[in-house]
Structures are given as structure tokens and as C-alpha cells.
Amino acid sequence: MSDPATGENVAGERPEPEPEGVTDETTVQGDDVELERTIGLVGGLAIGIGTMIGAGIFVFPGLAAEEAGLAATLSFGIGGVIALLVALPTSELATAMPRSGGGYYFISRSMGTSYGAIVGLGLWLGLVFASAFYLVGLGHYIVAVLAEVGVVLTGLPVGPHVILGLVFGAGLTALSVGGTENTAKLQNGIVVILLAVLTGFLTYGVLDAAGVFGRQSVPQEFFSQGQLPVLSTAALVFTSYLGFAQVATVAGEIKQPSRNLPLAMVGSVIVVTLFYVVTIFVATSSFGADRLGTFGETAMVEVARDLLGLPGAVMILIAGLLATFSSANASILSASRSVYALSRDALLPRWASKINLKYGTPHIALGMAGGPILVLVATDQVEILAEVASFLHLVMYALICVALLVLRRRDPPWYDPSFRIPGYPAVPILGALASAGLIAFMNPASIVIGVAVMGGSYLWYRYYATDVKLKGDV
Image (cartoon, rainbow, N blue to C red):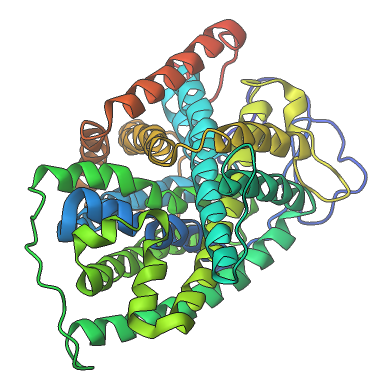
């Protein structure tokens, strides 16, 4: 076992000689091969923005407007503020411990193995739920594209969007086995295209809502559904903000982590929050919240059709395909890195962290992520998938903030972050309280499933890993 900061062996294990085929950028950790650092700042931002842009802009507007009306704009803003309160502590921890595993690694090294096991297994499964949600959204967009060209899939045993989600889930898992660098390049290209399309579309939409083109916006009462739905909707759409933490799960593959990790996490939250708020404003100005809510997962296609006609609808359909594809791609990658980190620490079987030396990727961990994702895609429960993912991540976010407080108080000699958050201790305290408080506004079924996942994680720890000791155990 290794010190999280120095890489020195702390459990008395003897490192083996460096295996053949390891590149200059690859390091050896105990008896494991450390993943190569191949992701730069643009790649980190692409993982964060690419993951968050998908659900937030292309799947949630209709669902959020139905729940909270125009005040869904505030719901997305609340989600962004909470994400920022957590992104700052996460950035500090990540620069002190730039290793794969993200929140699991930080919490296990500061609060001990039992907390780490619950959070780590919960993070793995939370990303599985999120990935399944994104893939279902991707399926809906593919079906909508086919409908535009007159192709309607009928006679299938389940909804065509489910089958398409399953196909793409299997394909993206296979793509990730082929190399992180290839996946990052694909992610970078998709995000650049998305931001260009969305910037143009939303600029036109804002000008239209302001009456520049002579149309009158739909009048709306801000709290048309009341004030409480604002918070319950914020809990629902918080899945949109999971991307910044996914940057931390691949911290072991980020180049110059002391600089690039904070910039990627905080920057992605700020950029995406701005896009979310403007999107809801444009969408509700075009149709009104009540009508927008009837369009479901592809509401933004109808908004674009209303603003720009068929070309606008086609443009957003393509952007929606890219966005949901991007979200699923990044989430599958991050879920596999959670499995990899857990296995390296012996909280899962050690064979799960084996690396394919040809591609430099944890192929078994990718399979352990991709398999459960496909099972959940088959359930086709969009809102439940989204909220369970949010629940498991909010628990982790609250504990990340607590982990920072613990480490600052203990001040161990290995804790030497290159980035320290402003506003300490107020920022991590507010981040922990806000993350935990948002859970109270979730659907009870989502809370029950989330608690069951955490309970199962603890039972696994008691059965399999009670003798495992990590840095931070007291």
C-alpha cells in the first residue's frame, strides 16, 4: 500500500520490478501499473463539460419545466452553486492526491477504509446509474432523428430507445478498452462542436426572447408551480453536475495535475451552469413551461423547431446526439476508474485492476462498469436513474467536504496540495450541508434505492474487506 502523496510503500509490501512494456509516463505502484498521464487541460475540461452538457441541456428542460415551471431556471442555478461549493474542496484534495478514484481515494485516505468502501462502491454504482440515464437519453435522440427522416422502429420487444441505448453502451465500453487517449480525443472534438452549436443557438434564442425579431415571448409567472418544486427539481437535475467530479476520478491520468485539475473542475462547473440557465430561459420563453413539459426528453428539439424551423430541429437533434453520447462516454470511463481504484486497494478482487498492456487501459474494470450499465438501461426508468445517481454523488460530495476539514485539522506531513481553496472553512462546511440537504427533496423511491446501495456497500466491506487497512485508518 502506498502513501497517497509520495507513492512510498506504507504497508510493508515490496514493489516488484517495473514490468516490460511500461512507457516513460507510466509509474509502478506496489505490484500495479499506474495509468499513463495522457489527458491535458483541454481533455479535463472536455470530460467535465462533455459529461454535464448532455443531460442538463438536451434531456432535462422538459422534465424540469413540468416540475417547477420557469423557476426551473433557479433549480439549475442552485445545482450549479452546490457543485461549485464541492468543486473547490475537490480541487484541493485532487492536487494533493492526484490518483485515479476521485472522491473514493480522497475519503478513504482521510477518513478510513470503511468510509472509503461505502463511498467507493457507491461512486462506482452512482456512475453506473448516471451512464444508464445518459444512454437512455441517447436512445431517445436517435429515435427522434430517425423519425425526422421518416423511419419509425416498430415491432420491437422493448422501446427502440432502450435497444439503441444498449447497443451504444456496449460500443462505448469497447471503445474505452482501446485507449484513454483515443477516448479523450473523441471527447474533445465533440465538446468543441457542442459549444459552438449551443452558443449560436442560445444567442439567437436570447435575442428572440428579448423581442429583437418581433416575436412576443410567452408570459410566465416565475413560481407558477410553487416554491418547493424548485428544490425537488434541483435534486432531480443535479445529475447534470456530476461531470466535474468525474475529472477527479481520472486524476491519475491528468498531465500537470496541480494546475489542470482545479482549472478543469471549477471551469467546467462555471461554463456549464451558465449554459443551463440560459437554456431554460430560452426554452420557457419560446413555449411556456406547461407546454414545454409535454415534450419530455426531446423538448429542446421542439424549441429549436419553433425558433428556426426544420434546420433548427435538425441542428439540435445532432447536438443532442453528440451531447448524450459524450456524457455516456465520459461516465463509462469514470465508472471503470472507480472499479480500478477499489481493486488496487483490495476492496474488490485484485484481478479487477489488471491493465491491458497493449492499450494501457483497465479492461476488466471497464467490463465491470459496462455490464451493470446495460442492465439499468433495460429498465428505462429515466427519472429514477437520474435521482439515484444524484443521491449517491451527493453523499460522496458531502463527505469530500468533510474529508478536507479532517485533513486540514490533522495536517499530516504528506498533505501538501498545490491549490488551497479560498474561504476555508466556510466553503467546505456549506458544501457538505448543501449536498446533504438537497437529498431531502428527492423522490422517496430514489432515496430508498440509494440507501440500499450504500447498505449493500457496507455489507460487502464487512464480508470482504474488514482486514484491509488504508492510509487514514485510525
